Amino acid sequence: MGGQGLSLSELVVERGGRSVLDGLTLSVPAGHIYALLGGNGAGKSTALFATLGLLPVVSGQVLVDGKDPASQPDAARASVAYLPETVALYEHLTARENVDYFLSLAGQSCTKAQIEEAFAQVRLNLAAQDQRLGAFSKGMRQKTAIALALLRQTPVLLLDEPTTGLDPQATQDFHALLLDLKASDVAILMVTHDLLGAVDVADTIGLIIDGKLASEWQAESANPRFDLQALYGAFTQARVGHAAA
Image (tube, rainbow, N blue to C red):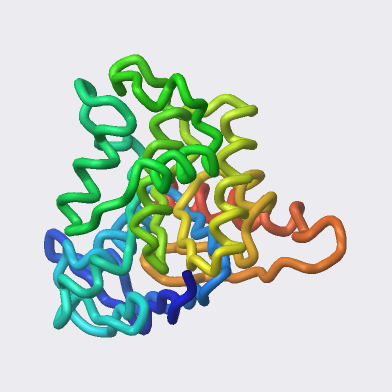
């Protein structure tokens, strides 16, 4: 799949008269998983919405596979798939029908064999593919959405709290999917409160405080990949500081 990845440079976004992002800078190259951690109100989801071009940028720049959502909104959005905390799919349609419908909205079409291959990649069994989404668990909905992202072949994937509400096995399965996408050179930006999950899959972990990147850690080749004690201390301190403010 490949591409130029995702970059946010000195990004400033204001909402309600205050700066929610205050010079946020980070980079997610192709074939890389970046986990952005932070307390409530730190600016994590705002960074995703700005990347999608859904919020005006006061200054700075977003580049999605080399395209600026502010000046090239259609091209930038065609290069990114977004998976929100609550996946917005149609309850009355089957998994296969949902994928067909959303591909048509994106101006794409895939064969039955290609769709079945994508479902196989995300480990959604054959019987479930023709079930209505109303009977699906959150983990099965996530698999359907990831299958759609695979078929769209976007070089960038944005995830907003993707493992919230998943049981341990579903979380493990989801992380395996992310590693498969990483192997296909997709650039993945994941905002999360799940520190342990981030440690399991991320290549880089960033901590955002008051709209700025306060700290950043790179995975090591040895085990443990990250200094969990240092990460936990920094994350806890940031959450306590934000609550006190």
